[in-house]
Amino acid sequence: MDIRRIIIAQQAALVIVAQLLFAQLATAQWSESVAFVSDESPEMFSQEATGPLAYAPRPIPLHTLRAAPDSVGFSAAGEAEMLKTIKNHLASYQAELDAASSHDSMQDNESDDESKNRFDQAMVRRGEQFFQSSCTQCHDAERALSKRKSYGGWLATVRRMAAREDADIPGSEHEAIATYLASLNPANQASGSNSTDDAAAAEAQVPPFTLNGTLSTVYRGTDNDLENRGFFPDVWVGVEWRAPDNPVSGRVIACTSCHGVNQGLAVELVEASATLDLVHWATRCPPSKRCPGNLEANLKAGRFIVPFGAYSGRVHPGALRTVSPPLMYNMGRRAGPIFPLQPVINMPYSDEGANLHLRYPLPTCCDWSATFDFYAVNGLQVGGPDVFFFSRSYRDNNSNTAVGGRATIGSTKLRFGGSVASGEQQNELFPIQTYKLAGADVTLRWEDTLRAYYEYAIREEAPFPGAESIVYGNLVETELLLLSDPKISLLARYDTLDHSGILGEQFIERITWGLNFGLYGGSFLIVNHEHWRFDSRPSIDIFGLRWTNAF
Image (cartoon, rainbow, N blue to C red):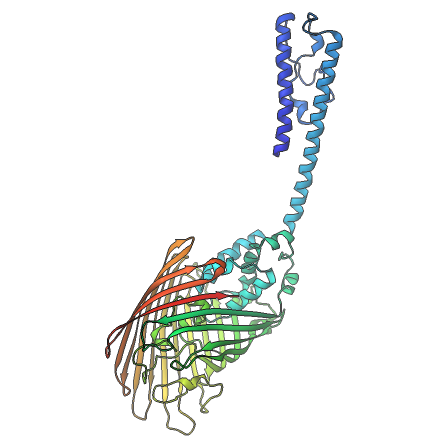
């Protein structure tokens, strides 16, 4: 019963109470007895009353009272007039109650009709669970929750994110996550046009081409020997094609990069690849369904980021939690003595070839899964002793193919990974210069409160016949949530880079600490202080800022 009906009922109750008091007073002075008559009594003065008022207690009929003095006004004509007035009041209140009941009934029917167009609440809850556990592995929840898209727009975004390296988001949950995110948009709730009751209609909402981009402005300063000192726009722009009920998809991503020393920036191709969903192609079971065996298998060909190490899946600026990359994967962010000693491998490491990606959910109680990547690519290309600048080339420098793989096992809370690769980097007809890469990593995450990450990588190579060079690095990084609103977290990182062999000895270690701020609109601000320590020169301190926003 709404407030309007309550007020009407209260008004009717006041009339009845006043009537009772007046009758009791009159009877006490001029009547021998007073009694109440039940609803069923034929002496009721308001036999026409219906609805809620029909069950209210009734005072005795006034015609049973003895005649009162004229001063009181209880003449036969006065009694008839009072009865008429009371009956009119009650009839008026009953009409208002009936109108209110009819209005409430119409609202209830409209609410029922509207609820039919809203999102499946069970799917919304499941999507929220997977969003919090899977999608926040690479970025804050606010980055997505602050955006407003249709169901089709979110489904395209979720699929694009799930295609990244080390993204543990099963294809069967893409629609649930998109449903949850779309349900947060008031426009979708009002229209109900994005309900996923009809899977075919929902799939039709997804545009075949989607454009995406990330702007991440970087500033690093306070030391003259800093590589690419000052401001730098780290921009990634991509376009993805994915047709409904088609096992083939494609994507192209370009970025600004700075490989030289203080030589400005250039635009390079990070990825230009096509992917074949093997399970969909072989069984006609789309990724949105739980296909027999629950196996996911994708074959990618073209130019792509080689899946070596956990950092290869986080190299996108939208996923970075620090201003600069780890020492062992550094590119364009070094300090102090730079040449000829290079990182283990420059990241992002993009190459041409093919990669087979498999994902299989393990039959355990903890939602664990295993992933495998097997790839064949052109491989690293030498540009001088321990220099890999030419590895960015879009064609190979020899006829030998480099091979490698990566395996992970775990859940969204705890995941272990390992990577290996090997190849030849010499130019065609030159003496063989082999290289081997290996790495291991582990990531721990407790909801949105704590994230801890460790990674190790090593490269062994023969820069000259009979010579050997080894470089390896370690990385420990933690992030602790300090405040939820506004979102502020404390980050600490310790990483090293150690060279030994024919090219010389060098050891570098760095301590990084800072604060990360979640800003309005889903943007992200990183403030870092880096303390570099060398074995060949004095220590230096670097201050850095990174502001990131994605669309």
